[in-house]
Structure formats: C-alpha cells, structure tokens
Length: 268
Image 1 (spheres, one colour):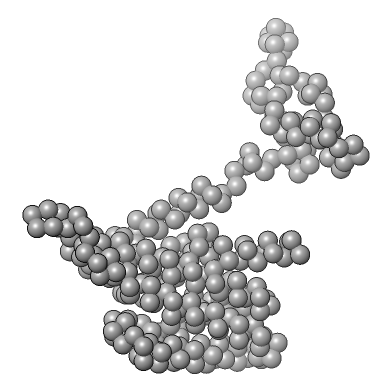
Image 2 (image 1 turned 45 degrees about the vertical axis):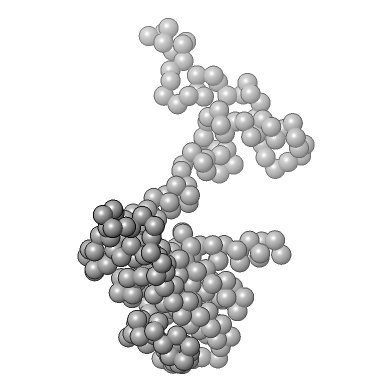
C-alpha cells in the first residue's frame, strides 16, 4: 500500500516540475503563447484544459479494454471533443467574457498534443486512479505554467494583476513595458521560464554518479563516503545482507583515487 501511495503521489508531482508539459516537455506552446496576455486568461485556459484532461483520462482508462486498437485515436478524439463541447457551453453560459478572450483556443483543446499524448501514453495503459493522478498533475502543472506566464506578462506589460493596478505604477513613476503584452514579449518570458525549469530539474532530479555509487551495486568503488555506511551497518544490524567492511580493510593510499602510496614513492 505504501509503494502504491508513493507511486500515485509521484504521478501527481511529476507534472508540476519534472515533466511540466509547457516548460519541460514544451507541449501546448501555441495556446500558451496566445492566451497568456493576462493572468485571468491563463488561469481560465488552465482550468478548462485540466477538466478536459481529467475527464478524458478517466473515460479512456475505463474503456481501455473495450476500445479496439484499430480505432483508438478516432475514439480518443471523439471523447475529447465531446468534453470540450461541454466546457465551451459552460464558458459561454457563465463566463462569456472569458470565452470571448480565449476564442478559438477552447475548441482547439480537442487536438491538444498534451491531452492526446496522456491518453495514448498513460490512460490507455493504466487504471483509473493512476490516470486521475496523472491528469491532475499534468493539469495543475500546465495551469500553473499558464498562470505564471500570464501573470508576468500582465504585470510587466500592462501594470496590472487580475485587472488590479499595481501600486508602483503611478503618474511620473514606473511605467509598463508594452512589449511584454506582444508576441515577442511572450516568447521572451517563455524562454526565461524554460531555462529556469531546466535549472530546477537539474538541481532537484539529476542523479550525480557520486550519489549512487555504493559497494553493493559497484563493488570496485572505494571512497570514504561509500565505506561509512557499511561500517555503520556492521554495528547496527547483524546478519544483514550488507557486507560490513572494517575501517582497516581498505589500504589508506587507495581511499583517495589517484594518490600514490608513500611506499611506492620511496621505491622510485
């Protein structure tokens, strides 16, 4: 149960940073650059996208053993298009201004590569619960990415955030930088955020060789760091699978690779 919960939490968390659809996988860039002229547009697009992704993952996962492989993609598009139609009707009924702002990009969710990709790569091969967590993770990651881009562009380009005037924008003071409200400014913000997320991925998820070297997986590794856990293991647990290594079992000159022993130096 613990491993299952850990797996489900991973499916959710991965979509936020490690496999962020927009900034890491670089998918869905067309609607992202087009609608993120304001924070409310980014949030609205993200919520609509998440709803469609979540419901399509649930339906496709539930029907994965029923849908024939020969009509798999047409079936996915039919399911997604039905959900997008529902979302569009809801937006027109309750938030007509947002629907007008998002425009054609709401119907285009039907062929969004993120939704089709998750349907084919994940929902089609996993159970409903795992598919729900995957959809929520990817949806939240995409929504946060759109909100971040839209918020930055609105603040820098128009001096507002969710329509509220920023306090530092005043007559004769700081003024908005209009280019950030234009496509060129969107590309600039997008490039900076992609670089930032790549840096975060490198810091948080990259596995350095020194971090995974141990005597069990790499018997030839010799270092003070790899010796310490095995010395502690011998004292903490008897009969463990770990091979206890005494501190004196490794020749001192070999604990630092590349360093020659004093005896060999004397012989020269």
